[in-house]
Length: 376
Ligand SMILES: [Fe+2]
Image 1 (cartoon, helix red, strand yellow):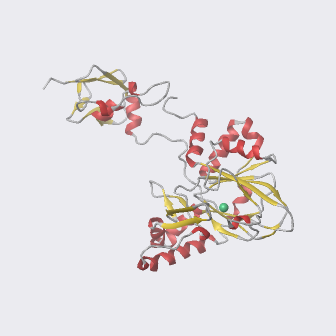
Image 2 (tube, protein in one colour):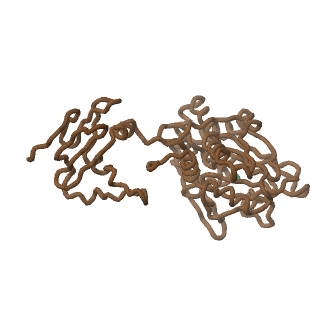
Image 3 (cartoon, helix red, strand yellow):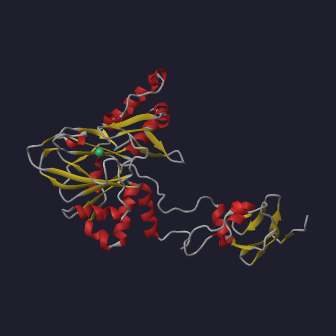
C-alpha cells in the first residue's frame, strides 16, 4: 500500500480522518462524505450537485491530507483530484443539521388569540418585504394570520397565494367556493353548523396552508371557530399520556366519496415532528371512515379519541369570531382546526372563496426572504 501523508492536526483512519478543528478539537469525517462534498461537487450556476459518488470505482481514500491555512486539503488516491474544505465549514457541518431559518418553535395559542392575531393589509405584502416576512413567520410560528383589505376579486386571492408559491389543487380543483349550494356534495356548502375539522384528510397528503377569502358576510350566525391543534395536543400529552401515545401512533382511515371520486387515506390524529413535538392534528368526523383497527384496540382508541375531541371544544381553546368581507384567513391545515356555527341562509349573503398552498413552499418563501441558502 502506498504511503499516505498526514500533516499536523490530522489523524488518518481506515474509513475516515480526524481533523483538529479550532472550535471543536479532533473531529471525525468519513472519506465518502468528504469526497462527496468537495466544493467542486456543486455547480454554481444550477446550484445542483454534479458529482456522482456512484461512479467511483474504489472507495475514496486520501494520498495526502494536511491543514493549509484555514482549510483542510486532501489529495485523493486513485484520481487526479484535490479537495479544499474551509475549517469553518467543517465546523458548521459537525455542529449538526444545516441552519434553517424557517424551523422556528411553534407558539401555541388559546381562545383569546383573536385580539393579537397577526394582521397585515394586502397591499403591504406587495410593497414591503418586511411585512411579507412577518406574515410568513406568523403562519409558521402561530399557524394562522389574517390578511386585511383584500380586493373583492378572484385575482386577489391568486396573488396572495403566489407570495408563498403555487395553488395546490385538491381533488375538488384549484379553488373552492363556500356558500350554500342547491345540491351540496359537502356539508360546507350548506348553512348547517360545520363541526371542528381539518380539511381533506382523505388525500394522501392533505393540503398544507389554507386560504379563506371572505367576499361577503351579512348573514345572521355563522361564527367562525378556530383553535390551535398543537396547543390542545400538547396539553393532552400531560393530561393523558397514554391517550396521547395512542392518538399519535394509530392510523385512522378517512374517505371522501361521491359520484366521480373515491378518495381514501390513513392519517394519525396527532402528528409528531422528528423531535417528538406536535406538528399537527387531523380531525374530521364527516370524513372519518369506519374504523378498521382490531376491535380490541378500539377499547382504548375510542376513549382516547373522544377525550381529544371533547378537549377541542373547551372554551380555553376555541377562538370565536365572524370573518368580515375583505379579510382572508390563512392557516396551517395540518395544525389549525376550524368549524362554523349554523347560519340563516336567507338573512343575507355569505361567500368565502378558498384554496391551498404547500407547507414546504411556505418555508421556502420564508428562507428566501431570510437570505439563507447554501450559495449565499
Ligand atoms: Fe374546512
